[in-house]
Structure formats: structure tokens, C-alpha cells
Length: 50
Image (tube, rainbow, N blue to C red; front, side):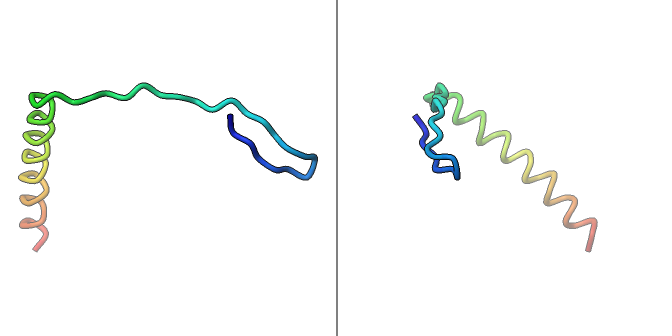
């Protein structure tokens, strides 16, 4: 429950819960590989701008 004060009084709103994902080692490796690929792209762009 989220409670907010307003000029009219208290506003009660339901809170939203979102499911979380517990990442496996394989999934973490996928993230790391994707970040490494992006870093290469950005590094190439930085070199071209200079």
C-alpha cells in the first residue's frame, strides 16, 4: 500500500509488485559478452571522432 498526503487527506493506492529474475551463471555470461561487444562498438566510434 502506498500512502500519500494530499490537500484532501490521505490517498491510499495499491503497491505494485514485480517479479524478479535470479540470473544463472550462463545468463550473467551472456550479459558480459554483450557488454564487451558494445564496448568494442563504442571504442571504435570514439577513435573515429578524434
